[in-house]
Image (cartoon, rainbow, N blue to C red; front, side):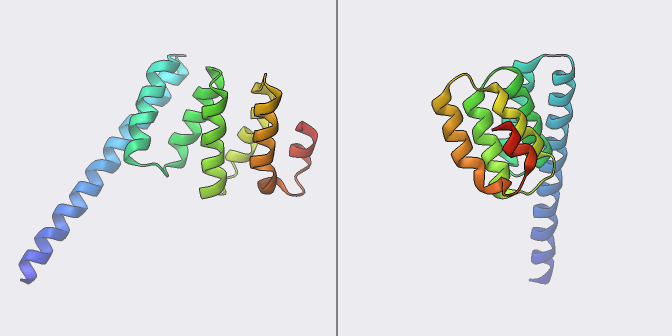
Length: 130
């Protein structure tokens, strides 16, 4: 019985390790594509990676940057909200503030402000951007 448990543990551990390598390689591919301004191809890679690891902060931040470059305002808003709710990364807040300038629609901007206000209490940059 003990050998069975060890074998199961090794299989599970190796699967997790293989997924980590796969997700990392997807991230690096997406980052390289982003650097060459191949935004659509980079977005495919970040989407694939986030299916495997939805809480991988670096991938989601890269995806937000791609969405901002390609004017996918609502999708970027969703991803920013996801990170603000699930992670207090210092990298998220500057992207969230920068995102104000991507809105052309006042209703979408008002919704974005309503959804992000609570994460920026006493943040002067956020208040000035509004």
